[in-house]
Amino acid sequence: MNIFVINFKKMILFLSVLAIAAAAGGVCSFAVENAKKNDGISCPIVMYHSILPDKDKAGDYIALKEQFTSDLDYLLGHGYSPVTVQSLIDYVYEDAPLPEKPVMLTFDDGFYNNYTYVYPEILERGVPVVISIVGSYTESYTKTDEANPMYSYLRRKDIREMEKSGLVEFQNHSYDLHTINAQKCASMKLRRESKDQYRERLRGDLEQVQKLLYEETGRYPTAFTYPFGKISNESLEVVKEMGFLSSLSCCEGMNYITKSPECLYMLKRYNRPAKYTTEEFMKKLLKP
Image 1 (cartoon, rainbow, N blue to C red):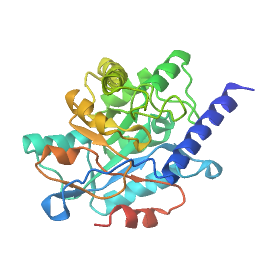
Image 2 (image 1 turned 180 degrees about the vertical axis):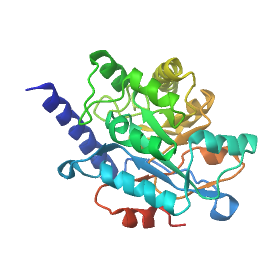
Image 3 (image 1 turned 120 degrees about the vertical axis):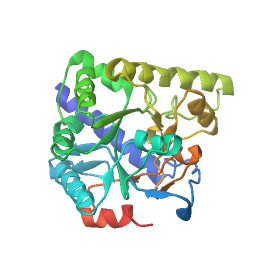
Image 4 (image 1 turned 90 degrees about the vertical axis):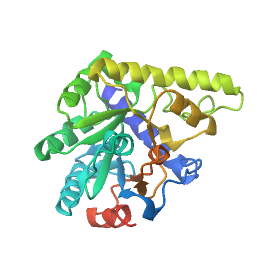
């Protein structure tokens, strides 16, 4: 069996696990209430994963290239301005202005097809996006130097190029915690672990991605994107202690950005499945 078939099956398996976790209600282990509607600036966030042109590959976590382009044109055409996590941090901590209608476009896992199909679109329009990489995936494909939009992930050299554009903000999606099985449940604490053991394991994992991205971009990630949205209460303390000023969840809903630093944690996002047209998805995303 060739490498393409093997890796494509692995990607499909991962997406199936994510779908099962979501259906079971495990993706949002709990929700931290962000600011109320009247207290801040509304900021909807889209959660994309893989982007492909082939309709027969489309699914809950694989959107079509034409859908991403349509989404982007819809948002820009309706006066929305894409922002990054740093934009929100600067607003909260530095009183930097936000656009009248901010929106954030995030991409989880660091699929190589984000480079193939998303990157040219944002370069053409000059709009920023946020990509949260899984460090072990990047290291693996850096070693093999495979670059196939169907199954591979961003290599170090892809990250360097995209960072230089000034339009891609890279964030931390864990190094090797993007797994749910009997031995590992994403970034959640395991029953057999003590609190100290868990803290050490989580910190050690996240530090590897911090180091990787600093080496390639000269910047430390400012946000932790929870794998599968799996959250342990104990993780919140570790994330803050490590200097992360924000975190991204898989819970759906509108965000209201205030001057309180707490509003930047557990930011809510709407997953973008292929089953919706742009107009249908935007009704869901942009509702107050």
